[in-house]
Amino acid sequence: MPFSRRLATKWLGRQIVFFRELSSTQDEAKKRLFTAPSGLVIWADRQLAGRGRMARPWFSPRGAGLYFSLILKPPLANPLPLYGLATAVGVAEALEKVFQVPFQVKWPNDVLLSGRKVGGILLEAVSSSLIVGVGLNVSLRREDFPPEIREKATSIYEETGLSVSRARILRAILETLEPLYEAVLTAGFEAFSRAWKQRDVTLGARVVLKRPERVITGLSLGPAPDGTLRLKTSGGTVKVHSGEILMWEIPGWESRAA
Ligand code: BTN
Image (cartoon, protein in one colour):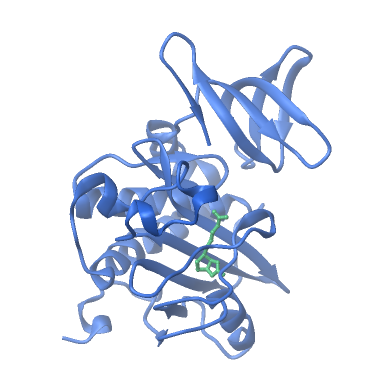
């Protein structure tokens, strides 16, 4: 049965364009932005120049991961970074339904499995629309990863030993994200705050956060309703708009480097 006949969504992914190879699904989505309907999905089997946050490359070998971008058009909730958090938690929920194991999220947009990064979300705002890129390591083996990310990254197969088709995973993700995006539009962060809290690996942990200009350490109080991260530091509580959590430590329990 064709993919879209089995997909139980109203608008998200009703139109999907699949490519064997692209430089980046983000770029293809950008090219089609002005003629595309909201909910268009660009999916590639392989990316030659997949990119992540902070101008990092996203390793996208053929057949081993899920790489797609979706287009969201106005009306959209504000501020837009909320969609990064919502997508991460929606992807985690969808994967839990498919694989029956708990996934975690890490501010702002990471999806983790057994404490290691298994997926990431890239948001790009173009005029008044949003391009949401999702990358997921599905069946990569540990030795497939470039050495510099081998310790921090993992794949669903490495952690669970389970193989599920990428089409089935994508369907579960789109079916979870559609009602979530609708709820975000009316309720903002409240639409997923509980789901986030249940899966937030750094909540209540001491974290080391890297920003371009400096490193901040503090206790993570979780995201604020505007999507920023609240950190209790020695100088008081601060709200951080962007950055990367390098390390987190739950007192008396475990310490992890990202
Ligand atoms: C991150 O964690 O840094 C975000 C990674 C986002 C990767 C995806 S793969 C599909 C889409 N196309 C890209 O070039 N990047 C995103």
